[in-house]
Image (cartoon, rainbow, N blue to C red; front, side, top):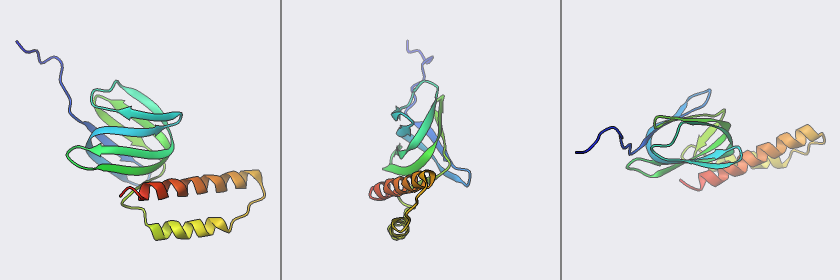
Length: 140
């Protein structure tokens, strides 16, 4: 006699949210997220967890569809009962990123020459965010 006490889940419900908008709400087969100290993979049936996210590429295998790529700028990831929530201050999907805007931004950043340490750090962060979006844009 088969027991139905163990439900097999074939997908995760993923929600990606920024302060400005809901970026994605979809069923996914797997998710790879940039945790603060490395990548974390989430599959159906994953144990509940919270993770601090770093800046990096979020990859989601949409159920019955293609893999989606997002550049995210830190935040938090929560997994609970096959529901995954990503809260991030900034996100850009591969489809949203415009190469001409990235080129403009790169040109502008190339003209900045800060002298103070905190300004140099801020410029480095901007350049890293630009490089990440260029990488993600190439995965359309």
